[in-house]
Amino acid sequence: MSLTKLAHNLISVKLKSIKSGIDATCGNGNDTLFLSGLCSTIGIIYSFDIQEEALRNTANALENNLINNVQLIHTGHENILKHIDLEVDVIIFNLGYLPNSDRKISTSYDTTIIALESCLTILRENGIISIICYPKHISGFEEMVYIKQWICDLSKSEFKVNEYSSENSDKTTPILYIFERLARCPIQNETVLNYI
Image 1: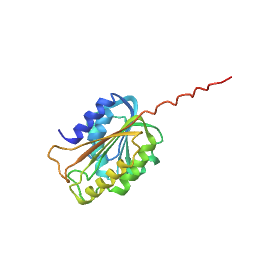
Image 2: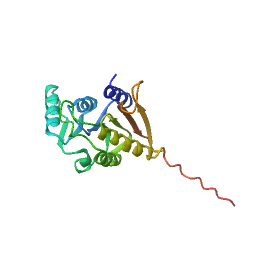
Image 3: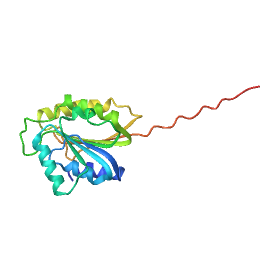
Image 4: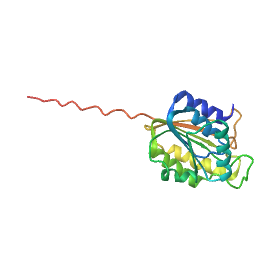
């Protein structure tokens, strides 16, 4: 099973239906289509990409599937907060470069970390962020190193993180991270004892 399919399965188990989601790197539209299928009829999916080709591919996929609850946004994912000011249920990052396209145009650690930090401010309780890293190429490996460190710095009391890769993995094998924002425990009212 591909990591993309695994990510979709894991998200579907946790979130049966969503009101809002983000595809932070729309590529050919596979993650956007998946999120749209989870989305309620009044919900919305935001799909970002810096490449016009990726947006065209995604628009074609949406049109072929008669989907109209998606907003395509032509900008890098580091600009998410310029376009979204509501809480979202799920955010997918499928990093690297656009398949069958110019491999010199790829995501990079600096903008990806900015995007991830931005997403923390709008991810709701029990919301999920999925990240697939592709360390086979140099920029992808560098990106993965920074993302691992970023994940290590997250509060363990606020986020649960799981890592997945193929059984015969090595340092160039793609890695999937699924992390969930944990529900905050309600603050218990302190009992005040009066002594006479």
